Amino acid sequence: MQQIFNFIFKNSYRMLFLLLMVIALSLTIQSHSYHKSKVISSANFLSGGVYEKMNNVEEYFNLKIQNDELAKENARLKSILFNLKDTTKVPYDTISGVRKIDLITAKVIKNSYSVFENYLTLDKGYRQGLKQDMGVVNSLGIVGVVENTSANYATVLSILNVKAPINAKIKKSGHFGSLIWNGKNAGFVQLTDVPRLATVKKGDTIVTGGQSTIFPENINVGTIEKVYIDNETNFYTLDVRLFNDMTSLGYVYVIRNKDTKEIKALEKIIKKDE
Image (cartoon, rainbow, N blue to C red; front, side, top):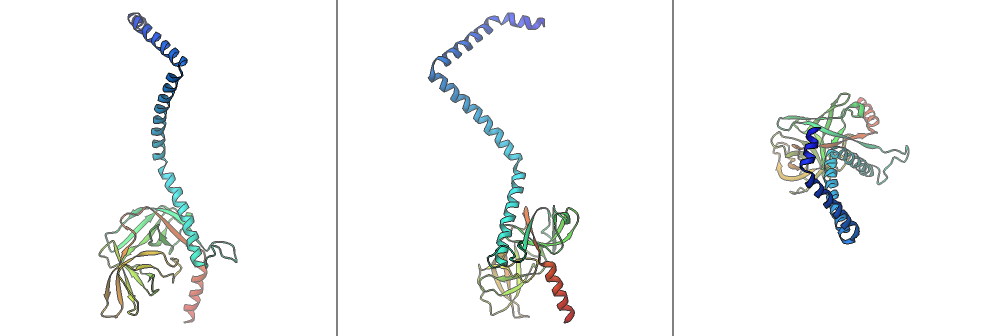
């Protein structure tokens, strides 16, 4: 306490000067509108800068929440588009009044792309509605097919897998083939068994064929890069440059087709009769 008093006593003249200067400045500002407006403007500039920095920090920490919300909104919009394709521009099943296809958002937490049989791991499982044989897509195109699920996680058979054929077609001509990966380049897959009658050009778009319950029709896959003729089968084999960068995946959408169970049950009956 004694030291505080000593400090005040030693600096009493300086403190008095500062006090009087503050009083004088206050009186000047209060009595002159020009000076007052300048002070207020400067204060607003400083406080605005501080608030802006604080807001930037807050927005940074809220990016995950915003990304989650955007993914959900994209899923909602994509489900509407898929239903439009499947129901002749009517987004609902007119009998039951519900959509036939829903999308579940998920995030890729593990991704392999350097071996012959590549898999993804998602942060959603059967508790969130994921089941085996559900298609997985993102904003650019197809990603793979759900293979196994646990309560809160799922493994996905990547399209970069030599054992994962997918029905696909040339968008312009409608000719079908089997989409498979030859295990060589993560940026390309191959469309095999395309008939020689098909008109094939470099740059043509390849999309899903829709001949299964896994993927709706016309989901993007990639573009034709090279065309080969298989000498054994006399069919085309096409190198397809993927729209997706399979080495860098974030949010994805899992396709839930509500008619899958009914279709599979009907197909089983047909197989028994054959």
